[in-house]
Length: 98
Length: 454
Figure 1 (tube, chains in turn orange, red):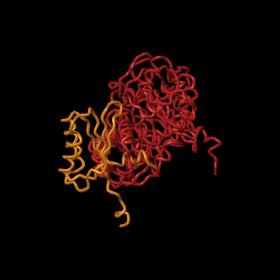
Figure 2 (cartoon, chains in turn red, blue; figure 1 turned 135 degrees about the vertical axis):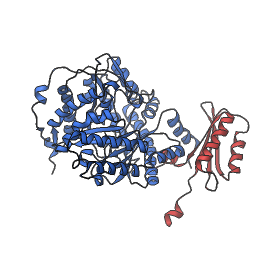
Figure 3 (cartoon, chains in turn yellow, green; figure 1 turned 30 degrees about the horizontal axis):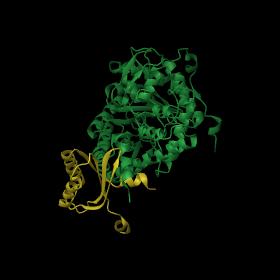
Figure 4 (tube, chains in turn red, brown; figure 1 turned 90 degrees about the vertical axis):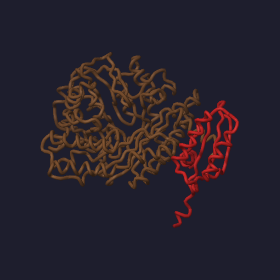
């Protein structure tokens, strides 16, 4: 019981990499809003000339499965000429936090 | 909270530096399949494997997608078949039917390799052990996905030289039996000293008798990531060099640990170990040789190579040990020739010989691995090479292994293509002075003095 209550919700990290164009954030956020995914944090920067954006998203209330959402966002990325990936947060926290 | 630069670093490792989880291997005990009737035994084995590993490949794919990290191979290891088939098999041909069953089960579950067509004979051979060993050439010729290994020595028991002699002959026969395929059968046959019970890597994986009914092991990799990290510390001293390898190994292993825990939870099978090995592939940028060269060697094989490899192996372990709750298997750097483009180049330019490779095996995690030698090499010479490697393992209390391919019809200067992860290799020169009288003595080499610790 204790474990269940204290287990944090798995967050999804969405990364967008590519050439900067108008409306990237709008398009991704619209999709997330339509699918009841809550954006908790957004940061962006330019690394080696490429636009990099990262969102921390809570998808626990979304009706879509992780796989469906990842597929949809990948297609949106293709339309915009960008690479959009969804990954569970754990892969990053495990690697960078002790 | 995780930041964008950390996310970028992880994804760069995966996309540009070929970080991957090399294998999720499910170990399955077949001891409860034993039966005196061969047909029943085969049926039991098929049912147990296909039931236990039914979801292995699909769970692997799910984890791959959700975490965005490639899991290159999904594999199975089983209890050494000589133990399982002892009652039902009265000749080598009986054992071959089990190899066929294992191949069918591997295909049904979708794994690319299944290991454990094995015998553990470090001190002596039972009739079943000998039948299994004699069946290896036929078993490997008739199956596609089955891998075989034989443990012929250990620090605790010494070296079974009768088995060494027999394995020299079996390697030759396997090469002959698969000569239409560049003697590919030998790529699926490993001769060990001090074989670990929980190795997830092929071709030497088997599920030891000390293990639970089923267990999940994970083998990580990432030579490309280590190489790129070392590029940032060119010219720095050894302290900086070692720290860099250690930190990188830590990060790589954490990814493996995560995958292992997820796979274990989703499959409802206990987590065994993470194997911290740097396993190269033939693709460019995924090479252990390139790491050694990045440390400052003009070519792998140059003086300094053994020291560089020792350093690498030790730092990988030091970094990885804290990143995982259970570490096991082989855990270190692999130095296969045909699977590592940097090694192949070094052999081709004349910088890397069999003798230097043997020295390197004293400090790496395995041994003489995926080396093509002339098809005319005698069984006694192959046995001599096996005995030398086993002696290194026995005295140094480490695992050593031999996976040589005496390619039928090929000689020094020729090249041979194995395909896929197995790569391609130049045929290397072997010392041709005879060791036949030594190998023919028969019997055992006793356990070394430092094994008496009780």
